[in-house]
Length: 201
Image (cartoon, rainbow, N blue to C red; front, side, top):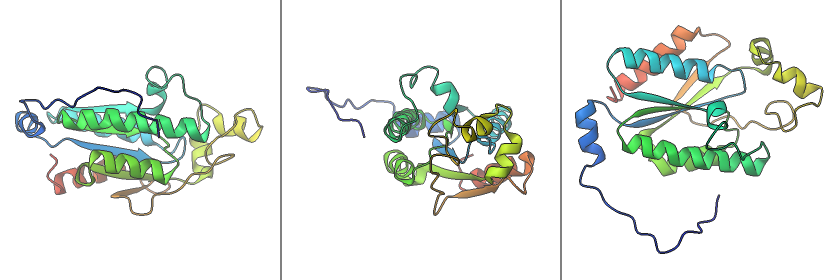
């Protein structure tokens, strides 16, 4: 993880607390961490969950892997070290959003367990929901509108998860969405029901 270089800095407590913001918003700030192979459906599901919750009056935001790499993380590649830093940064951003009382979704491959465990520890176990979008490489290849798997197999893309780079499946995720069997609506409903059950919404 990134070395802390700033010195002479002090943490400031604020008069308005997370609990105050949550009472105002009538929801609980949580981080929904969608993880899975490229083209497994992470972004699609995260955005549909966002759409459903927004229509019901909830404040939610999606931090999407590709979008974040256009700005905050545009200086990072896909080496193991850069992937680690990518997830560290988004974990910190996610923590801030959760503190603001926002239901926050991330849609990142996040292939390494230790990085996802870091995010869980940082945000807090009762505010971190790991959602494994489980899909075979074959299923993802069929859904791959960008042609990334084909390029990876031809050697045009290095360090591609599932082909030339590893993906470590979650061991105990809060939710498993079997993308080989479930429809998008069924996957979204499963996430919504979990949030209701845990009294997030």
